[in-house]
Length: 205
Image (tube, rainbow, N blue to C red; front, top):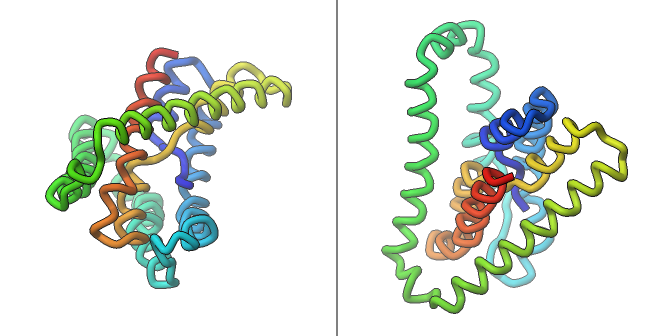
């Protein structure tokens, strides 16, 4: 139910000689829409299990955590753009470090809550198999959809890489808002496996 990644979608598209401008637009648009679409989809598809309830307050929190920084970054670009360009290595380290800390904090909390006592090796294998199957289906569908729509090879590459990704950086904060703290680890476990699989498969491609 999550939006696409931004960084890896653009990076993989560039390495595969795809349409980078389209990848930037697609991934950014996916993230903006996902801020509102993900809570709505969770409310429609997951509340029947009693696992979660989505309130307007939860949506506001997601907007505050994900949309406002995005908007602020664009508004401040004329002021800080030069600094960012001059210190690209530092900004990249801070950016990746921030994502690492978000994921580490959420997963560390899940481990402390006994994640591995609730998930057996067989369960983990099933989850990984489902993730691999979903990724295979989505990548196959997006590539052939691009051909059916008669996209150029560059645009098919965008569709393949942007259309198959799921954002861990957006997913972890959203899960923390939408689900009870005790269940966040179980919720993000498939996402973490899917995220690693998508990086490995796309790197090979």
